[in-house]
Length: 271
Image (cartoon, rainbow, N blue to C red; front, side, top):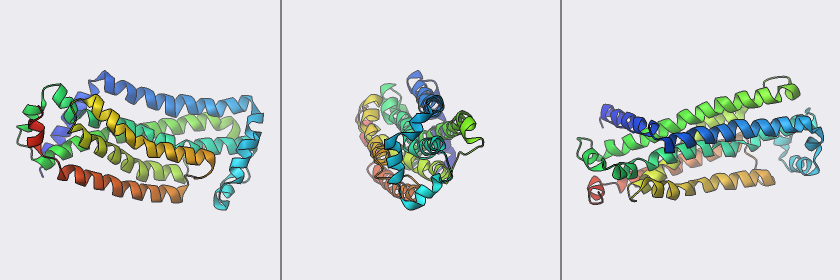
């Protein structure tokens, strides 16, 4: 495989994506709302209404946590417990929506977007092999997803530490769970999301159809969030390690299947 050709294709796709308002605007607005505005409001409002931290349901949720997780909240006031739980743990599953969304948006524009722009036939007649073509499309979406995820992680960290400073009096974020999330789980989530969408994108007519079909990969994140809010699951370091391993295996499996069924001749028949 010629790495230079793969890189050139990935760079070309990234340039096309960055010129598209329909793709760039959600990549900017969703992280801004999800990782800056809403967390800031959730942390600041209890400071104005301190009794919210003593809410009976929240205290019952903490009581249902495993013993090793309860220890993480010992020594904190009720208000500090609320901040640490929301910013350090509850918001973690929501963060995974960002790389999924970005990877899905870029990947949906891969083959289906080329078809809509009438550029697919020219691309398929280049000297790129099937593997190089597939790898270039995957690399572009993965790099963009990781760039936005890392930037979102930095913005989120700054937001929660600044908003919670009057309560915590120190920098308390990130914790081990979030470090595993950004370094181990997020790359796998992005790869899984783009793998699904690239495979779908090669088989449907428009980027919109590909993005909608690939949106199904968000469902496990929603299940994880609901499980954590209900107290059934708790995204701590151990679960993050296991989740990441499972996602890596699933993502690599989907990519392998996707490339195994990928043939440029079938794409030419749809142009």
